[in-house]
Amino acid sequence: MQQRFVMKCGGSTLAALPERFFVELRELQTNGHYPVIVHGGGPAISELLDVLGIESEFVNGLRKTSESVLDVVEMVLSGKINKEIVRKIEQSGAHALGISGIDGQLLLSQPVANADQVGFVGEVVAVKAKIIEGIINMGYMPVIAPLGIDEAGQRYNINADTAAGAVASFLDVEQMIVVTDVPGVMKQVDGEMVTLPQVTVAEIEAMIASGEIYGGMIPKVRAAIACIQGKVQKVVIVSGKEEGVLTKAVVAGGVGTTIVR
Ligand SMILES: Nc1ncnc2c1ncn2[C@@H]1O[C@H](COP(=O)(O)OP(=O)(O)O)[C@@H](O)[C@H]1O
Ligand SMILES: CC(=O)N[C@@H](CCC(=O)OP(=O)(O)O)C(=O)O
Image (spheres, helix red, strand yellow):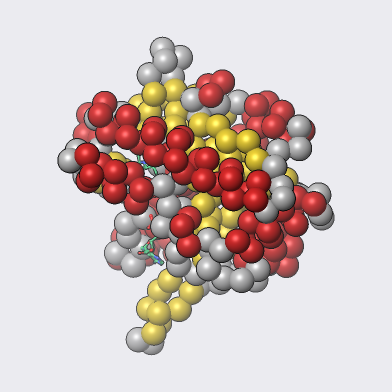
């Protein structure tokens, strides 16, 4: 069955994604699927901030974002990374159109609850699905950089997992695929690290409380929970390094970790 799906590509894995990953994406599109891509780029942002000597720190997984950090976030995500992905998709023979959440107020946002601690970090309140549908109808894959904007024109830095989850929910897609640098949610079982084929919401909460899920995995599982509590039927966390990972996730199943209610 053909499906629209949101694919989130993490900054942890972007540079390492092989050419065949993008070929697979093209093949899925040729076979009638509609990928919508939301990307991260946290490591590249940190790298440029370092070069520029601008301090940055994370508070509970969110980058503390001042006006000057925001400039760098926008340059790196909307400029460098977004266009890199578009180029790779175009090289594969498919067509992609890159925009950020600011274009056309695609990701209408508001400050997060703890904005006094983290600065210009936003959460999405609405996604202009029409823009994404328009891009798809023109035959292009939408590639979205996770920046947000409010009605007053203030821009926000948005965690890419959170942005992808919001896009998946507002678009009513069947599935969100979170592509990262680990094969899924991992846990130590009998002294060995194993990838869990599936995790429930209750198991996730327990693993966060025990510290078994930490750092960058937290926004992924939280975004996954928010999605599956709405209309999105399936969220799967996979590694970009695994061969044929997208086809397995979209068509066959049995890859990575599926988050279930
Ligand atoms: N239980 C877990 N299983 C797998 N990875 C985990 C877990 N808890 C924390 N992590 C960390 O989450 C990382 C993925 O998040 P992150 O580095 O933010 O990736 P991305 O850039 O793809 O969003 C992994 O590399 C790993 O270090
Ligand atoms: C608010 C916040 O933390 N925003 C992230 C946006 C990029 C991101 O999430 O990239 P990854 O998916 O590669 O982690 C940041 O500034 O790093």
